[in-house]
Image 1 (cartoon, rainbow, N blue to C red):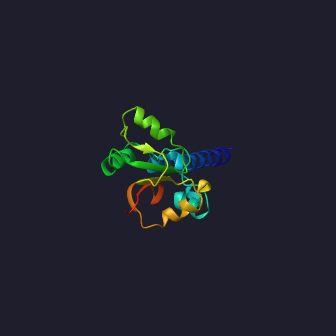
Image 2 (image 1 turned 90 degrees about the vertical axis):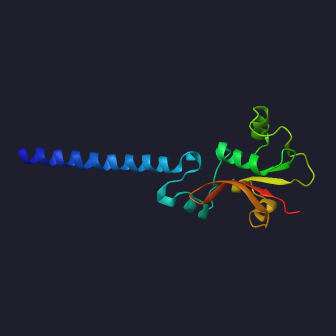
Image 3 (image 1 turned 60 degrees about the horizontal axis):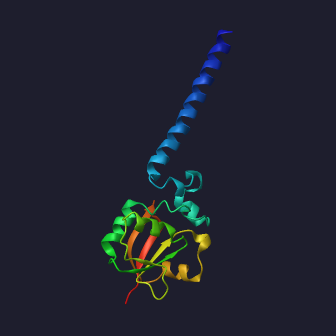
Length: 159
């Protein structure tokens, strides 16, 4: 009976250590992917890079339109620029304008040839233009990425 108790105790501690290790792995992954937890994928498939290679979308919820990305845009884009957004709705940009986060003068999806293309990497929404844009010689003026996988980019049209 002492031996059975020792075996049960050892199993309890081994199981607890395995569980603690798994929890720590998840905490570490959450820390690594911050602030883009919604764009993160399990290390079992290779994280964001593995997910992209398997054809998964890189992001969904505009979480990459964060302060850092918007600050990059504000530095690089003139206050009267024409901007086309791709694979995302224009509404977040209109809300940012109302809040004073980005210039009121930016014309979002107003037609014509835009100065800037903002592309969210929701590959399921890509058409031929978005696929060509990624490989174009347009200048990348702002980007949010996770583990080297772009989540959103702003491209300046070369004049």
